[in-house]
Image 1 (cartoon, rainbow, N blue to C red):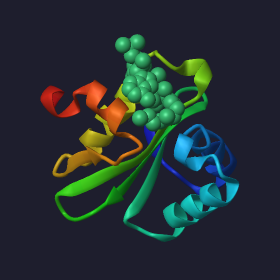
Image 2: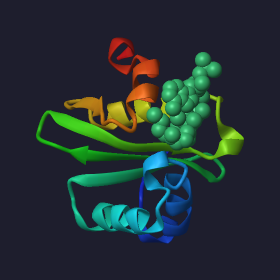
Image 3: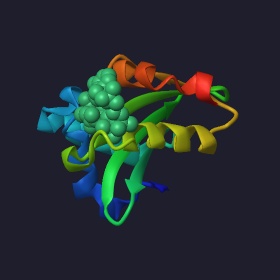
Image 4: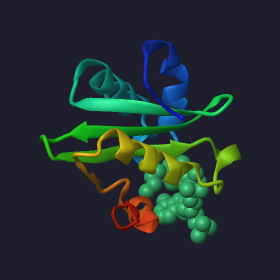
Length: 118
Ligand SMILES: CC(C)(COP(=O)(O)OP(=O)(O)OC[C@H]1O[C@@H](n2cnc3c(N)ncnc32)[C@H](O)[C@@H]1OP(=O)(O)O)[C@@H](O)C(=O)NCCC(=O)NCCS
C-alpha cells in the first residue's frame, strides 16, 4: 500500500533514498528531504507492507505531467515486484497525469513498461 510521507518517517525515508546513486552525499540527501517537506509540487510516498520497505518521489511539473525523481526498495525485499507495484499504485493515484522518469529513474521505469500496461 502506498501512503504519503510524513515527518515521523524521516529516518526511514532518508535510509531508503540513500540507496539511490544520486543521493549518496548526506548534504544532497538533506537538501532533497527539505524539498519534499517544503514544496507541494514535490511528493514523497512510502510503500507499507507490515513495515515500510519502499519509497517513490515525484515532482509535479504541470497538470498533465509528473516526473519520477526517486524510487528505492529495501535490499531485503528487492525482486519481489515492489518497485513495479509502487509505480502502478502511483499511476492509479495520478490517473490524469503522465508519469515520466528523470535521468536517475529511467532505466527501471523503462523496464516496467508502465504506460503500455495501464
Ligand atoms: C530499482 C529498484 C527500486 C527495483 O525495485 P524492485 O522491487 O526490486 O523491483 P521489481 O521487483 O518490481 O523489479 C525487479 C526487476 O527490475 C530490475 N532492476 C533493478 N534495478 C534496476 C535498474 N536500476 N534499472 C533497470 N532495471 C532494474 C531487476 O533486475 C529485476 O529484473 P528481472 O525481473 O528481469 O530480474 C531497486 O532495485 C532499488 O531500490 N535500487 C536502488 C535504488 C536505485 O538505483 N533506484 C533507481 C533505479 S533506475
